[in-house]
Image 1 (cartoon, rainbow, N blue to C red):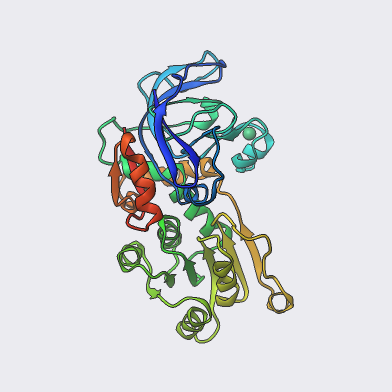
Image 2: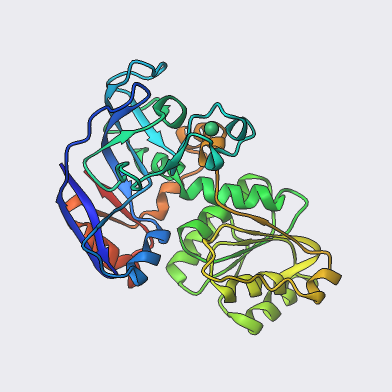
Length: 344
Ligand SMILES: [Zn+2]
């Protein structure tokens, strides 16, 4: 089959790899219908050292079950399923606590002999715990929005949940990428009424307004902090959802959070230190967030996607075939595309 391989920064290729097949009785084989390129795929796209040992790519996908192992129940050939961005048994103590990202028997896609989502098919380990059956057909118009359950919607939701965003909290969202916009959608869905979106790309912040942002701040750094404080009577917001992962973004987060408030981060941190200095200490600011256990949220979010109450698939503004994926990486890296969907 064909799959996406990264050989180094800027070097993404689509090549033949061995066809996947069941290896364990807990596996399932999924033919991929839709996958996508993640903002986090851009970190290696910018910095991965050149290697002959290419890295398989992709951790967001949905597809059709083509084969199931003998220990898998509740799933059958022909089911349309979505995969969270880590695989997990969904039964161990961490999974039972809703922390499937720490599963004792789980792991990452595209690592250690497991297929990536950017390919024609995937062998899914721990299929019963990992996959969620979707009550739709292969040609459903809802596939783009359902695909966001793999990662980006659940990540935005996790950020908002960890922050405690709700009817009584004001919210700042830092970042107008697909995760930031999903965080806006999630905060709105949880009842937040005042949502300040910090971002500079008008087409993206326009979508953010449609998702529920009440204010847009285009300034960055000290100016951006000043602007958010002006909008909130000088105080800042109760919650700050940091959806970028760069040092400037986390610094901005501490600048715009209200005393006693919460900074929640889901942008994969590209910095070693968090600036929680004496000043932050004196203001009783909490830092939370981290990798999103998407599997823990899918059951809650799925009904709202199915009945069209939320349309998170609007973050996809470009669709490519598997062969066109290298161009999709370029488009996202050059910010010509917000988020690229891959249609097999
Ligand atoms: Zn587990």
